[in-house]
Image (cartoon, rainbow, N blue to C red; front, top):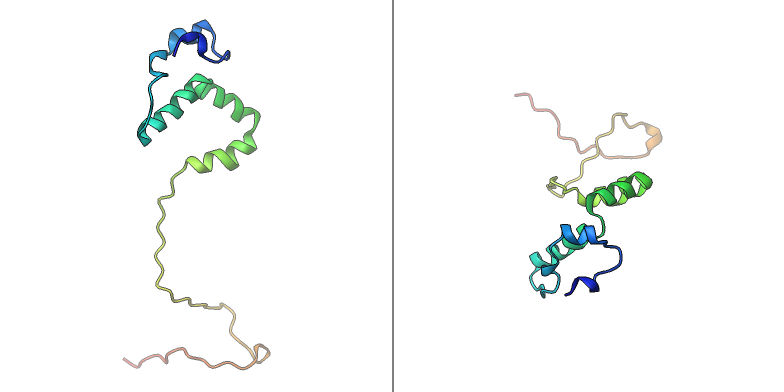
Length: 107
């Protein structure tokens, strides 16, 4: 791809900083596709442009973009049993109930 086919958002000084010889290669693997996205990110302004956008749109940055980049390392295991333990004892007003709590052992 010749330098004159690049979008007008790039000036001559930008072209001097970026190796445009890689732009005409066909990318097939997922890793190369990710690299293409990162290359495009750099071409349109990269981190400085993102920082300016984030400063102008803090709500969008903190609620939409930043959470997507954070990886969740929490794993929740559940036995399938749900126990509800009330801090307030049941009364007659709660209606009939059968207490299935095991009696304490005398051991």
